[in-house]
Amino acid sequence: MMKTDIVVIGGYGHVGSQICRILGAKYPGKVYAAGRNLSRAGEFSRSTGGQVKPLRLSADGPLDPELLEHMKLVVMCLDQQDTRLAEACLQSGTHYVDVSASGGFLTSLQKLDPVKHGFKAAALLSVGLAPGLTNLLAAKAAQELDHTEKIDISIMLGLGDSHGQAALEWTVDHLGAAFEVTEQGKPRRVSSFTDGKVADFGFDLWTHTAYRFPFPDQMTLPLTLGVPSVSTRLCFDSRSITTAAALLRRSGLSTLLRNRTLRSLAVRAFGRFRFGSDRFAVKVDVHGTKDGKPAAIEYGITGVHEAAITAATAAGVVLRLYEAAPEPGVYHIEQLFTLHTGGEALSLLPADADGSGPPFTYALDGATYWTRSTRP
Image 1 (spheres, rainbow, N blue to C red):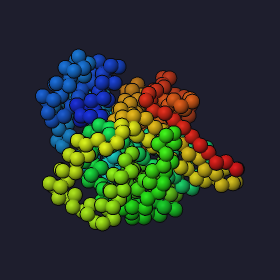
Image 2: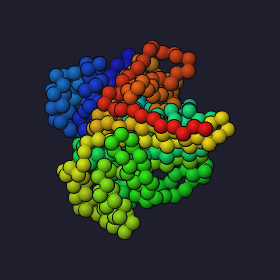
Image 3: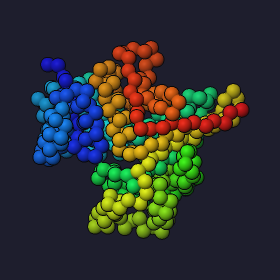
Image 4: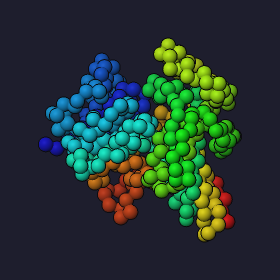
């Protein structure tokens, strides 16, 4: 039986619904918005004029084998605690795309041996803004140098933007997190909202102090790009809120967010109140050598509505995988795609060295690109 369906788990959520709309316009009737709440899925389906269909599905339970027979591709928009669902997809020949920032899950899935586990399809990880476009920016900048020694990634999120519940909870849950990064080829333990560094995001955004945060791009790029030192930092467009978060961490009060009631209040506050704008920005600073001399290059992207660019990036890679998938295995976005820049415009291109597969270009509308370099 030919697999034709695309199932977006969390497909009626903030990001998932936008992914569904893009894919549903291209493949009407073949895209399913899946989740536990069939009523919400049905309501969303009706809002698309039936281009997207509803499906009741729990990401925590086993997948119906009959359902897997029809599923060509699954897009996961929810954080996963283990790899069972992804493994079931890959073993049945269903491609798997993950739109999450759960470093532990991504690392666990990446460690699975495709041959040993009998994978018949491809998993694509690090899809979205961060990880995702940050990975592609880092890879593009690193290609400009002969040797890359260090990559510093900075992310600015607009608190006036509308963020999904899952994204808000993930951010609050990690305000006091400790995590591992790679420095000079060795692991180092660091903490969220420490070790601030000034980042110039270009245009009229000026400079902001960004602090360490456990985005998984810094955990995977040392492996995919072979770079000895990678760090990722976060700030908000409201400097006062960024400073308050850093003070909360420094004082130790961030541990109070482990209390369920206080955590719920913090998530609600981030979701209800608009402290800033709807703009986002990401920037990579890459240091190394060019022609035997020290060199550095800065690449950046800015735009509005972080969820929209996340959805656009995810939809772009899904459209490519639907038509031309790689060999079975587990990949990160920078291993299969590259960024094409024309002026200030951005597009996704496949990274096929031989140009195999059908022609493909996907414009990332709404994002503006810039670069600066220091060359010998």
